[in-house]
Length: 219
Image 1 (spheres, rainbow, N blue to C red):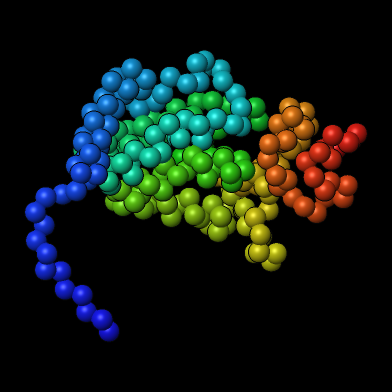
Image 2 (cartoon, rainbow, N blue to C red):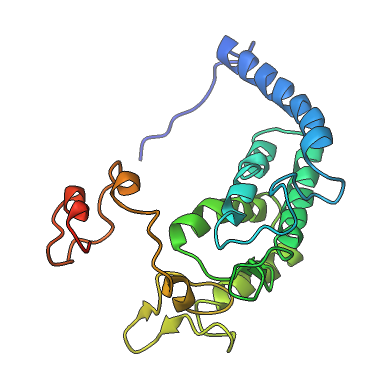
């Protein structure tokens, strides 16, 4: 084994480190006017603009506005960054229990997404992942275990996992189990024009070899 001994004294930090620290200090102070202007005292945000908002989409967008704040705290931000992270997480989670999905229940059930695809859940729940990393206290641990339980059939109202086939039962899933209801209506908005910039999500659909094939009649 090669042994390396550090024997050079640290006289002064490199310029890039000084500038990085200055940037962190500047960013650390910049969040206060944002919180005052765009976030309510209870942590909820000014979007959606109406209380009658109804959709299965949008929770992730609200969470994404603050998703990297816990990481910034870990990198050297002040204690207020962790407090703001908790406040907005709690506030947004409560806020979206007031919005209906269009299926007769809220967007957030049991403090978790009621049923949506994993891309959107992954975008939004990066906030919770980093919040747990920054503050792995009992409340966050309890939530993390409970959320995981939605995918281990630990909650009888969320039978997302098929143990025999070893797969998640539906592409849209969450705290209310498989969300097949989201596919009962044919959504025409997500057609070729929207799919064109992205690769195909599946490669085993007969007649669909490229995104261009989505223009075929009936596709």
